[in-house]
Amino acid sequence: MDIGIALLMTQHDFNTIDLARLVEDVGFESLWAPEHGIIPVDFKVDPPLGQQGGVPRFYTEGGINHIVDPLIFLAGAATVTKKIKLGTGICLVPERNPIRLAKEVATLDQISGGRFLFGVGAGWLRGESEILGVDFPHRWKQTREYVNVMKELWTTDITEFHGEYIDFPPLVCSPKPVQKPHPPIFV
Image (tube, helix red, strand yellow):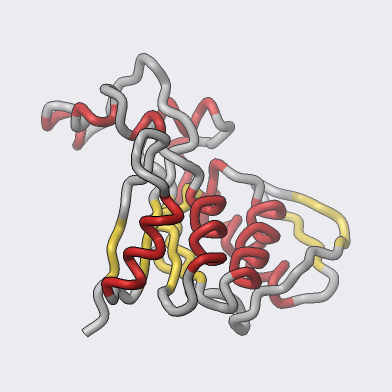
């Protein structure tokens, strides 16, 4: 059985690179990093979570509001590990530009030698999503379109796309991922 570990790394935790080495040395199969780009100071939580007393205190009391970027953290982890798989748990896809994200994911897959696992999601925190330009009620539709765009960018030499949320003329996006046709995608 393969067992991975998901870590909520913040700027206040011990050295994240040392932790990546430790996770590999202990024998875990994978290391997963979550994402919250920002946390609004004042936010309300939509149902059903909002009806259950809101969010855990660490979201507002010095925890998750200091979270590190998962792709940069995992790139650092890739440089000091050799075996463990490295995954986003999850990447908030609609909060990022899909062309840049495709390049970042492919670069991370290159740096890690094909060990990247792409966990994707659409987010639950309306305020965060809206500040970052997401059409919150349609975030899953936007996520689906962005993932499809990235798959095209990873598997074609020249890509053109005309969608509801992203529209661009023919372009070249590289590097391409090591894993073919692309890193595994987990929803």
